[in-house]
Image 1 (cartoon, rainbow, N blue to C red):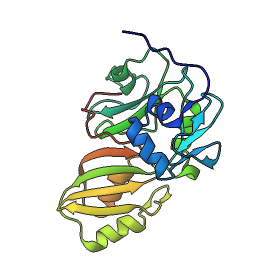
Image 2: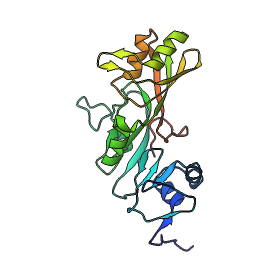
Image 3: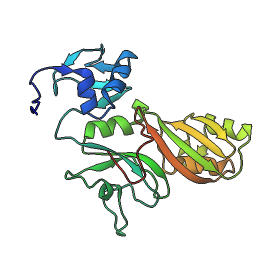
Image 4: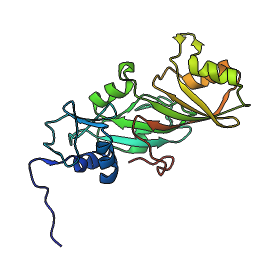
Length: 226
């Protein structure tokens, strides 16, 4: 068959987004249609063409990387793996799991005993966007706790809990079934959800991050990345 060679010049936005790992072209088209994509600060239109590397594409507040020298992996971190580039005790790290040729670092952290989605990248701009509180990128967690929190306990979790370093920002917290909570928050204080749940008398037994901003992937098995 003929080898298709990418023509130079502007390319359709949904294609560029799909290449950058936002999602399939179909998903990318939906995001554009819903007005959740901007190109250089203007809301994008379906079918719009963009010049790669010369525009800033933002989806739900997150800058999309289209520079080929920058790599970003979405990893489903299993329990027991350390969220750092190297470990003094020789434990497996998230960077070992990704096996990238480039020098990459995790964005934010998940405790060794927590699991779920983590981004690993060499893209400093993306890291800044995802970690700086001023951007307020939502992260969603499924949290199993001992017991079933009362309405008052849930209200306290939503309104903020006083931890040593100050009060937590308001969070969205709902109980999906007895003892299974969904948290949505944009802070990432050290072991924050564990400490919040401890404070209301319901220690965490399992914690899984299921979404980072617009990124989620229920098909990604623990230990796998894309």
